[in-house]
Length: 241
Image (tube, rainbow, N blue to C red):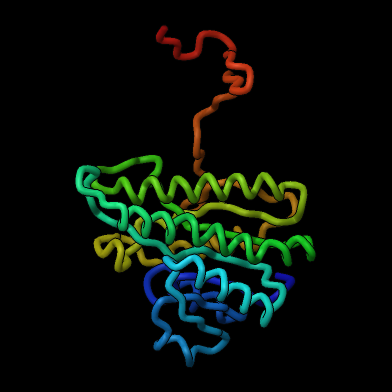
């Protein structure tokens, strides 16, 4: 790796904590978390306390971090919430929190770090997602929808930077045992190899893709037979009318 700084969100437990401890062995980790009491004495970790549901505060903090740290070539947007609530009782407050933390805040953080990445023509961004937008399990509509929004923003941003040496990808860590998923069968360290692969991509590496436990997962079916702009299709497809 050409630089030694990485920003990681949501590092106080689970996957984020595991990645922080793993990567801080050789990199300076700029750690963002709600509670930082247990982070202040960890070597190579600079901790900042932030509530990612407050976009105004996130913007202010990122401006401060960029001013202090300058170019940060690596970013892992890990923080997230996973509300378990059925669609008939969802309220706006929980909807707003899920979308802000899971989608809007990671997008804002990308927006703040990308200018320096563009100046240096190098950046590696990993946004943690899930299979939830593909599975749409009962009672997890907010989680699935907010992660779907993150997926869309990630792929769009990757396309907008496709002509540079900036790689922006999605990764699901797998069914890890965390506070959000206490019954997960896997240790959070299972995702380290995939993270290393994505952080060390060369200039010809993939961007705008979804990775899970060492596998690239398709996010959409083959729709090459659909011409969205013209409103036409090749062949009959799955025609019903």
